[in-house]
Length: 591
Image 1 (cartoon, rainbow, N blue to C red):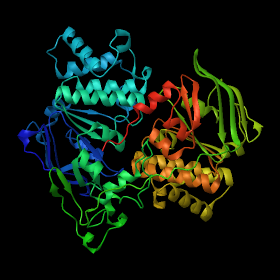
Image 2 (image 1 turned 90 degrees about the horizontal axis):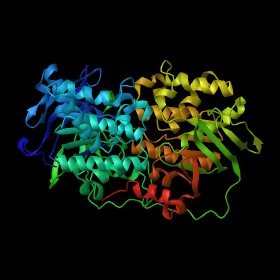
Image 3 (image 1 turned 30 degrees about the vertical axis):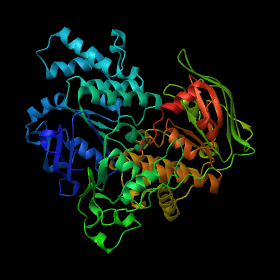
Image 4 (image 1 turned 45 degrees about the vertical axis):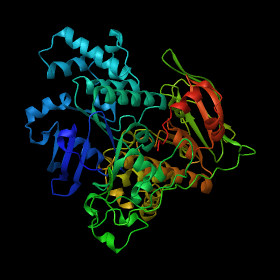
């Protein structure tokens, strides 16, 4: 995609490079532009440099890094030349940012109305109170938030995840910026809330003329939202073009591999993980960074390829561009099961309350042995509460729980052997991993606790468990803070698997993973089912992942299961209106 002259676009990035303090390049020679009313999608695996570019668009870099060269022009003005005081006024007023995790981005001690008012007062002190209130009502209404005084007086923790994300959007548009940078803003949202947020983004871009940069690992969401796509690998652009060019006929082997790794609710193609690992910052090869993982690599790949225009609005950096049209391997659909497997775990008449509010109401659910059951529903439907009741983490839960023919109390002490057999992988790996321990220490503690294994045998178990989740064994020497979000989630899965469980409960474990790692986890779970007859309860809002990994689906609405059946029946012919809404709102590849 040819870079437009500065007068033709809102945002233009020229020769941008971000480096560590020692000179190691994080991203190198980045060039792109965004026009008024257009959205650019930036995709790539963890470590590709997506967030480093997003941060640089605000004139900033992460701790230990610097913007070493280049220019970021917004309306022809290079924000990298601005001093600290000028830059503070530009952020929010000219270019704004929407973070991935609103719970971390919003001050938990400040009411929503005060957060919004403070933003206006800081950047536009000349506005009176009534005008600030009018602007707040306008911004919150634009992003689909209720604008009653009672709502605006709430604290962030009193809002749902979708509402919190909309507050971040309101903060981002409050000062009417020209450019918005969005870093994985819908990752943790259920499909209905995600659909609303995406529609809001489209409307803001179209009606306000805002230029947007949308960083994401979710290719289905990107395909529905953006106008152009830029594909990053190891800190460099490997392909860029219009949405139609990239999704219909990708030419770079890495772009095709990304698309083949992405699950789709329609199940039209097989989900295939990308072999190998992206190179570490200090271990990137001198030539093509993707060559070690590419089936088409040759001696020519020892030289770094240049990014070249190959047609109208389409550029590629590759010595072996794919010449044939892309035809993804079609998904093999298994024959319908004639008879369900015997249940490993059975929940009957399970109810739970938070205070006086019912969360689960007489839920019945069977988990067939050796099968994967997906639990889906909107935020607040009770998915996590039901999952946590299986491991005794829901105080006051009532009902019957039978595991492998034996009754188990829903809340109370469990034997060590039962705790080994039933493992839980939490949604937020950073909170689930001890920040003071290395990854090796975390895994070593688990294997010693359950199996009393030490020494060389323990190290072999640790290396094996890391390899199974697509992590190099040497990562055992690092701490959770040294890893990306996707890497931390894989460590959490490895810690569960090292216990050799019978039932694995996965609570939104792929929501923070890029598509290649997600595909590797899906492939791993399939293999575990086949090799170890592992039973899985998979809590998720991503129906594409459900299609790829599950055998059965249970749909929760307001604490009640409203539909339950095989994955093919529920997703292809949903019977309940709520399920139909979830399926209709799920993002699909738009080629």
